[in-house]
Length: 314
Ligand code: FES
Image 1: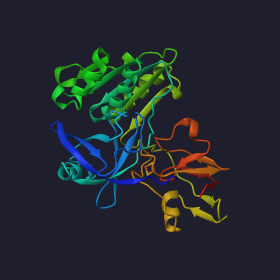
Image 2: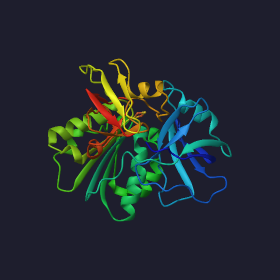
Image 3: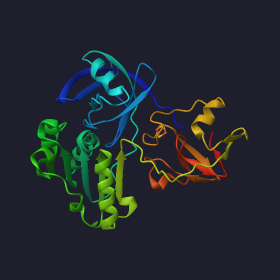
């Protein structure tokens, strides 16, 4: 696991972009430049109670002085957004991590983005990067109305007529069948409410899209109700110690109980914080964040398990 730099950043501005979405710009109070990032990256916002929330960066990756995020007030959420809306005010300080990218732009010749509500945030930076180099893309943005569509001004400026707006409040709903079959070099991305990303995934499956051409960022885990966890053993590569993981405990829990300091945030397999390397084992990957190409030697400790046993790079 790689420890991430945590910085105390200053809020340059915190301005509503819709009635329930706050656009927050951070800078370092002393240093002119922040760690660089690429479109699709997120930062962790550390709350005073030690919990962590992830927010996609939605500013300009070429602007090394600032990080911009958009935070939706989730009244029924876990409390992080309510804290952010109440406490992130101009001039204030907040603990923010260096960026991490679990949702990068793929190496394709055309990009189809489907966003719902606050799920638009990673696509703002992706569209900006593609527009700057003449890349081919279309961005479908679903919201209830223009007034409830975050960052709309920035999107119009960046995307022009490559922005397709779907406002359900005026009867204009996005139809996933519009995605159709894949064309050579095209990648499909979705981020937003579960119902929308599930519909996009279903349309991609029906249209014959290869899994490595479809990129989904989820806000919540999808539960496989038929999955029955089995116990297994985890060997620690550096010491040779073997830890038993019972069926009702996660590998993350067992490591912590045995004194390992392991980073985590969501603990539902969606954020990437608890990623760890492994060797010689058959891992049952149950997360929604690790790309297919990295699953042969990396895993998420919070939700993924092993058949019989594995060796962890710890
Ligand atoms: S803690 Fe978020 S993926 Fe494991």
